[in-house]
Amino acid sequence: MFDGKFRASVDRAVTPIGAGLRRTGMSPDHLTVMGLLVAVGAAVAIGAGELRLGLVLVILAALPDLFDGALAKASNTSSQRGAFFDSVIDRVTDALLFGGVAWYFASEESPHMAMLPFAVLGVSSVISYMRAKAESLGLDAKGGLMERAERIILFCLGLLIPPLLIPILWVMLALTALTAVQRFVKVWKQAGVAPVTAAKIEMRRSRRQSRKVVRTERRRTRISRLSGQARRDSDRPAR
Image (cartoon, one colour):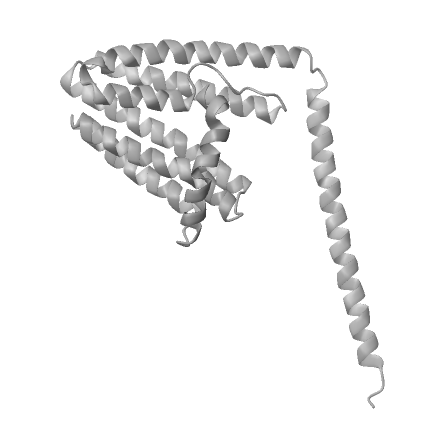
C-alpha cells in the first residue's frame, strides 16, 4: 500500500543521497550486503531479548535497502541481476528478523508462541511468490494492505513497545493473510480475461531470440568485413 502511494515521493527524496553515494565508489550490491550484515546483528539482538537495540539495527538495516535503488539509478548500474539479488536478500532478511523474534518468544514466552512469527513469515512468503509468479506470466500482483514496508513499520513498532509485540504480530498475520487473498483475487481476475497469456509469453521469448540472432548475425558480418579488409590490405603491394 505504502509502496504504491509513496514510492515516487521516496524516490525523489533519496535521489540526492544516491548521487552522493556514487562518489564513494560503492555499488548497490555493497549496500545490499551491508544491510544483510546489519540484519544479522538485529536478529541476534532480538533473540537475546535486546529489543530496543534490535529496533535500532532493524532501522539501520532498512536504510541500505532504501538507498541501493537510488545508487543504482545515479550510477546507471540498474540491472536484472541487481534486482534479483536485492529481492533474494529481502527474503533472507525477513527470515532472520522473524527467526530472531521466534527465538525470543521461545526463551521468554513459550515454545508455542514461537510459531506466531513463523506464521507471519510463511504467509509473507506466499505473497512474494504470488507476485513473482504473476509477473512471470505477464500479470500484475502488486498492492494489498500489508506489503513489506507495512510489515517493517509494524515490526519496528512492536520492538519499540515490547508489550505490544505479540498483539501486533497477530494483527500483522491477519492483514498479511488478507493481502494474500487480495492478490490472489486480483491475479485470478486478470488471468480470466487474458487467455492468451501463454501465447504472449512465447511471443516475447521468440522476439528476444530473434533479436539475439540478429545481433549475432551483425557481429558476424562486422567480423567478416574486418577480416576481408585486413586481407585486402595485406594483398596490396608495398610502396
